[in-house]
Length: 90
Length: 144
Image (cartoon, rainbow over all chains, first blue to last red):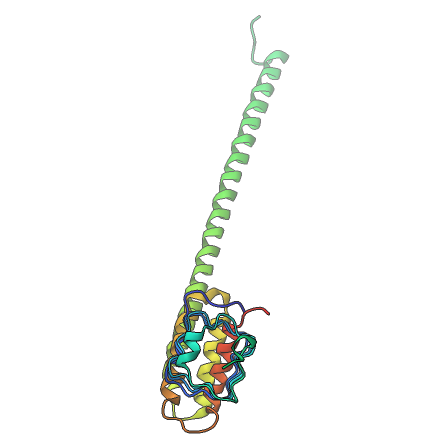
């Protein structure tokens, strides 16, 4: 199914652990303070997504696109978070 | 030459006139027939278009009703009713005729996820939320 023009995902504050959003277009999505513990975000497009306070413990962010240092700095990550190669120094 | 009533020339003349009148009559009748056929076909077409429009309106009303009912059902205490509401929305959003509903459906479903899980303490979201998340992932997936 093609992505939907004009729709911006808002999961702010939602607790959606272990959810699968792999390869999803999450451009400008509001994921602030969402609990995405153990979520599969592999290959997702995070351009402009709000990740302030987003819990990404154990989440798979490998191959995510358009993720910036600033976005990641606002999120809650730990050793179990799988980050894309360019963030491996974190 | 003088034509008398019984002369052969007079008879031939009358035959010619009657053939002429018959031919013109046939042309006029054919013309009228064509006009009648065109008029009837136009009337039939109009009827068919009106019936089609009526069917479209009925179908649209049915979808609006399903959509509204699904909103109420999403607030039900019974899991099966909520799942039914989610499947109904999925079905509507996949119908190419109702692309206008797609965004409202996604927005109401994500609003439901936010509200339903805000106080959720379990490791995984409940079944209905998982079903919505599956649908969201399908809807937002980009070709790999």
